[in-house]
Length: 480
Image 1 (tube, rainbow, N blue to C red):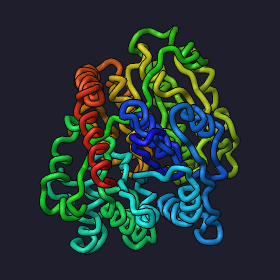
Image 2 (image 1 turned 30 degrees about the vertical axis):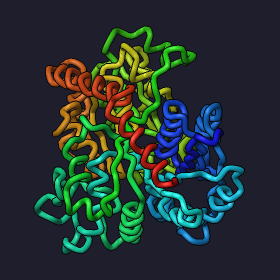
Image 3 (image 1 turned 180 degrees about the vertical axis):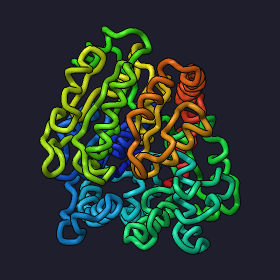
């Protein structure tokens, strides 16, 4: 590090959904803006080999110091929600983070944390450095999230029982059924954790959001100019840094899936994956399998062991094998009998993980049946691939609504998959409409426009590139 380099430390909570964009943001800051970047990922004992490999792959231009997560088994019950577990884990790991930062030969000038790292603001205050939050989701979610403490005082009763959409100043209203998971039950302890988390985010000196100007002009304008919403975030600056995504590299060594795709006709394959943490029930998995078979369309399906109820069941243990109690491990144990044999000529089933970016960029892929996690959503958009929206947890219902109603680059089931099992006939219809229907053709045209907008945003002199330059400039002015 030279004396003219800005040193930024970025704290990431566990889970590849947060760690991957943190690493990618750090890589961009170091590569394109000449910053010295130290990544401080909090790592659990459930870290998968894929996650460990990911951390290793970023060590060429980043400093990565892994921080073991605190043991919270005596503090948080094992059945606590993912949000509660993550917030408690990050809070209890603060002493280890403080020790790591204190021992650095060169102290960071700036601290960035994801939305679960807000209690680490005390470390920034101790060292007298500015603190910024990196929202790995989109601007519409950020509007709801930061405004939640106000809604908490305004709304009587459960949000999901409200007849009218929830008004977020300057933003598109949020339907009660689309609220993020912690808002589903105000009587649950997770709700209190969520509200405290939202207050912590608003205490940051600024926000970096994984979106770009042309994608969400209304929500971004609200965060910057709406006086009510601006007062909630204490009139702090908002920077667009997206899309922060893994870029497709054509020289990557091929594996079994890519080699299979090479043999398929152009734009003929549906890619099915629920992300690193998403899981579906045994019954839903069988209906999905039957639906894919009935559609007679080609598919690549990344299958994770099913669960009985929890849709985010593998979030903190992504990469581990095995199914629910009494469910045999391996796809043969929970897919319809004979499914793999009957579909062997049109489909391929992969256990747990596949090279998603390479798959989405393959010429044979026509659509993506996705859980609508924001990372996967951005990867699909920037690959020019329309979607079947299948939201499961977190803010994914909001993402699905944006994709289907606003951007019009996705279709979705008539009833939320978290409320009702989606039947095989509906699965087959959505797949066929996307592959062969006029609606699918229209979505393809629109998603390609977004793809070009995204590429332009992160290119030199693009909106996100300029926004990051402004962030760096503002950081320098705060520390001088």
